[in-house]
Amino acid sequence: MSKRTQQVGDEIQRILSEVIQYELQDPRVGFATITHVKLSIDLQHARVWISVMGDEVQQDETIAALNHAKGFLRRRVAQELRHLRVVPELRFSLDDSLNYTERMDSLLRQVAEEREQNTDKNETDQQSDSSTSSQTPPAPTQEQE
Image (cartoon, rainbow, N blue to C red; front, side, top):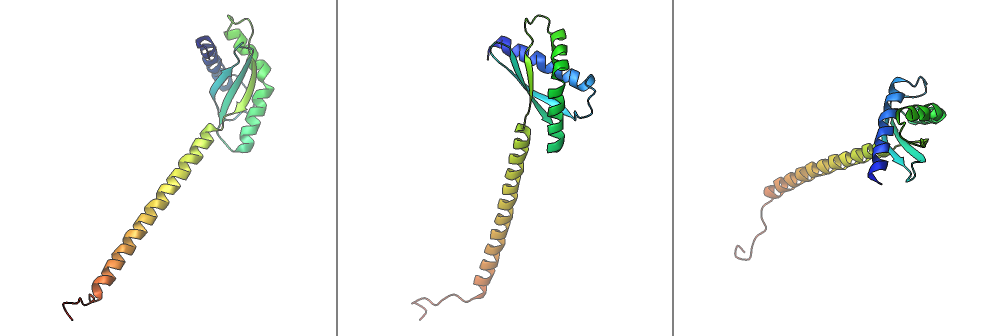
């Protein structure tokens, strides 16, 4: 990705974030955050990745509402970025990388807890084994016979 493409993507992200937060009046749009904007090389198309707080239904409704409002949002981007000859066609997609990260973090915590429980159990078993072995007399050696 070229430096210019990255700069335009960052500007589109900033503009859309402000418009969605302060101007968009659709009640279907939940708490949404734009995580990334990926532009085509010719700047004709922009895929906007959105992270939405809430359940799957809320996420789907938010993406549908944003795709429904993409004409309004594209017009607002055009008003802000007058230096562009062509304003990119917007397409909104759900960014589930945060959900994936949370899931992996949860699984790692679960493994760590299970490992800790197994370690505690093994230590308890070893202590009980050593206490029972100290109660039984040692086996006689050949010299003692």
